[in-house]
Image 1 (cartoon, rainbow, N blue to C red):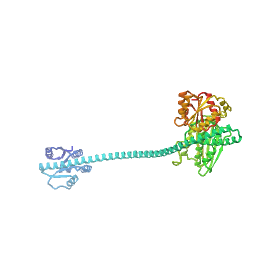
Image 2 (tube, rainbow, N blue to C red):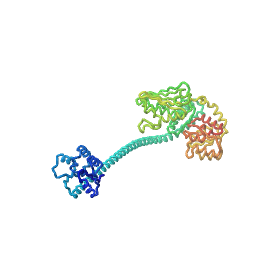
Image 3 (cartoon, rainbow, N blue to C red):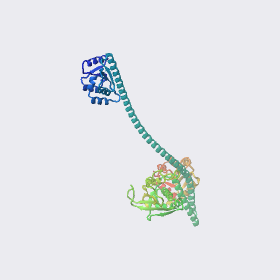
Image 4 (tube, rainbow, N blue to C red):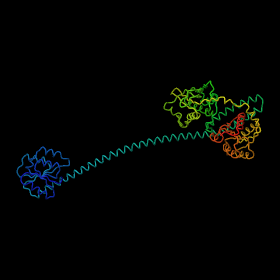
Length: 557
């Protein structure tokens, strides 16, 4: 289509002559018999159009003008007009001007002249077609660039979103790591303080134990009423010191839960002084205790620590002073997932600033605290919740900003209240009747060992003593006793290890474990928790425990 030359010469032999010249040039000549055919062929595509002046004057102006105007920007269709030498009419001149890209050859025309003019028109048209191709390539390239740019922008946008999301995650992880590191440092600090506190409390507990047992011995040796009165006051002070060391050991986490039947009212009354000292003089401490007895099976030391934790939190919520009310009650309408039944309630109420709603749901979470780093571990209320849950109950917190906070613990009430008072009155007499029993005392503290040995001797037992585990094993090799009283925390071989090796050597001898603090899980694996004496203890407690161990014949495991 694009290599053909259109010929429109309706008169004479002009069309045949032009066709022959064009075909000799290696081009395709298409002779058009009418002006409509010429316009149709031009629309299909051609290299040039060669027509006579008479044919030009016969072309309809409007269709020709419309076709020429509709040409694309790259196209300027070439025309060759074979004109006469005569003067041209205005219409002919106008038609040639309308054609635009036109070459006029006056007849008669030499064949070479016609061939050169045709060749020039064809080459010009080829350049136009090349321009069309280049323009199309440019358009295609532009479209491809736009498509690639759009894809690149989409990828950049997506990558930017990914980087922003990754940066947000990274910043969150950095913040969380910093918070965790700060919490870890605080926990390590508290652990170090706890270890120091535990060591001091353990040594102080041994001193209290020596004082207590010697006071007990003094009271039994002397019948003077005045001496008995002095001994009673001193033992009361020892009892307060014992409670303090128990609380310190609980803080140091050197004691596991040791549930026992506990008079909760008496325990709260006993902790009044410690709470008052902890919260300071600006805060009034009120105790509202239930009229009915409140007995529950729980670890008394842990309950004291829980109440103290809640009291300290209440103090921090009342910087300008206020009222702290500690209440006990019996409730039959448990909350949460607790089964129906009677529960002992222990609650601590303050008149402080209260807790914001968005914080209230997090107060029992481990390590959650609203205090600055270094001012609190966030373990206080989480320990309260864990202790209540481990004791078969639950803990709740209610608060309104500006109106104070109430933290409440519920524990299953015990129906066996009489057990707490069921200490046999004749325990010491029964123990004295067992004077033929031999007891081995293994204790590394000389003063504590001496007090236990003298007390057992006073009760009528034949006593052998050993300063450590190795000495105890040597004593066992010489003679197997009826019962062993063993300290837990000893240098070298601890009490649990000694008991295990002693049973391998001499069988299942009844054992009483005397300890100020112990890993109760380890003790439970060795002999259970029913034959444990918590220091400081008195002679009556020692007599009862030894008697029970001898009667049972073997430790409970």
